[in-house]
Image (cartoon, rainbow, N blue to C red; front, top):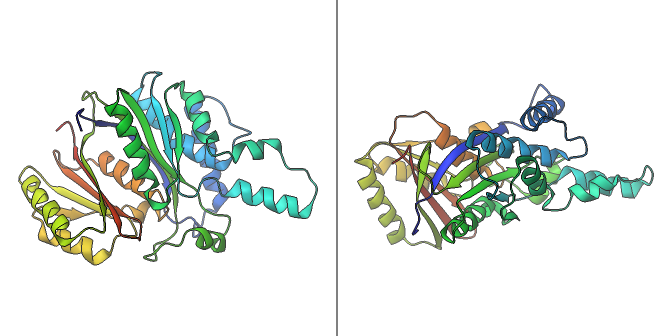
Length: 309
């Protein structure tokens, strides 16, 4: 990277066990709507639940970072709006009442980013990116490319909501390691400004069918970084647990983090892992490593320093 990229204003909003919540889904949905109303000053009566979930994290990040109007928005989602299409399809099968026209608008893939940009007053690039369990990594990659090409600020987040039923969730996305299904909204502001940064992107590496030598090089680099401060490691659900455990055991001053215990498992939970890792008030400076994989041999390693380092 020719330009240093810094992280600002990490924001996370999630519920750990979506399908085992004794307070009921209505309580979470109400808290979600009220939080969005507090952030933007009015209720979004015609917006879908997915839009609320996207907005709650994005607007919190914007409020803290106060970026310029030229800021770009890059929303990553593996599954998109699940509940609105399910309701629309059910209504079309059963007949009247007629489907609301707002439902058709809300199902459009870019509607959530439109709401975010309009509510936050952002007029930069505006993209929704869906690439399965690596959706957040692709969105982050696109934002970094835009910054390399001259964009100064980019709002990047990962958002996925729970399915209407467990059967529907397993049809579209089945957690490979048996984690509890989850949902969440996690966002970061990227910029070239170091002031008030909570971290800096050091390296983002894409590995197709990596060999032992690739992991050895990563290990050697982490050993060097361990001399500067503690290392915190997290991983996505498609990364084999024994591999991560062995990596942590071989590293001095390394600690394994399990963010899915807080947010559950969903396609863009890596956004939550990174944002929450940068929010954590652990001793600084430190190194944060997150490893993602898509189950087909593609790995992504995201390495960053916390603080201004």
